[in-house]
Length: 229
Image (cartoon, rainbow, N blue to C red; front, side, top):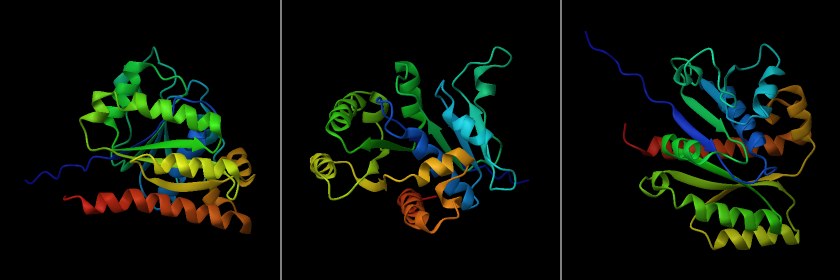
């Protein structure tokens, strides 16, 4: 009898050492986009504040399911491997991380990731922090000795401002793609309060944001389709 091997889930790591840059916003809305596209999606929450977990707890029943893995606190009742498991058939895994990530955990997550997304806000303070973080990231052998895809996602961006121009100038000096600029809008706050993605927010004003998430996922998926099976 021929055994069909299950395809490995593509793992997307949302990572930045600075707090308040929008990692949970990226992780939850990306997971929602994949779930809405009928991908078997898991969201692993490494943040002890458990913001992604609370978002999923508030998620209304009947919406596309997203499996939650509560990784921020170690359970004394099960092994760590069992605690971090995802359901059989999972195709996309989104990993949300805290600001201060322990070095060994960071190395493990970088090693396991296929795609790394780095949220950056358009302010001088955040850009300086991102520069330092990217420098530190390249020191990890798990990152240097691999062909992982990495991209910057601009978060809470207001175009035609000095801060945005500063962000664009900073990114031009990096050999890292800048794949999306998420608008500074209260729609993300509304969606988070309801436990939904901005794609599920039934407001005309959210259409532009929905299109951005579709484009972000296409950037990830186009690379997967280009790779040999």
